[in-house]
Image (cartoon, rainbow, N blue to C red; front, side):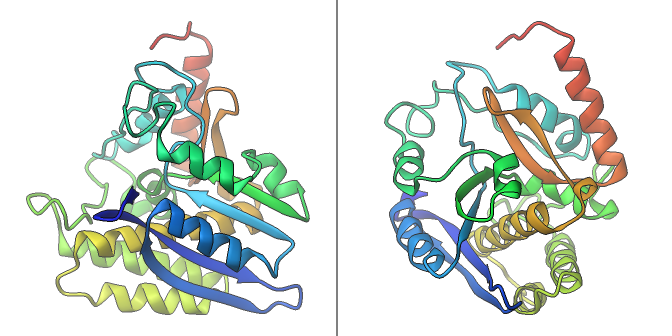
Length: 259
């Protein structure tokens, strides 16, 4: 995300005390650009929540985090994959990786529970769109049901999956009164030849939606897997995906930790 040639994407949503809403369509950004946009957009609001599609707590020297083992129980069940995170990944999570500078300058509390409880302050939560989709719609949960919506992988990409993901996000946004977000997702579903950058933008909107759901939806609509010591992920869940995640978490808790 800190490479101008391979930026990430950022979408913004704001909610006023009187019920007014603001949605800024996703745009491609580096970490530095994202930081400036977040700081500027957050200034009128008492509480700022950044939902980031990247690990925010990575203490392990090698291997993967326990939370990734939990996420695998659903993502791989559906036919997707989970990338391991460790300090051994130079440039991604090593001591000098851009994510840590971004996190330090953001100055946000990295604690999902405080995010919900607080009325003011800056907060950061880690999210994972591939896992989130399995909880947002039953059509994305089950063997080989993970949507292949990455245009950057032309051998696996399916236009129908792109349209299904966009439509699902539009439906969820509409149900929550997020009209501009719903309109953006509906328009994106009409793209005939989306590119990788379009998927980055779509994932940014999914991240924003997860943040909204974590704050405003009933508690059983989302869950936090993992912990604040070894890493966590906040995700929407269905009854089926929650059960699978819970089962894996209990299994890991009963076993010694290994890389």
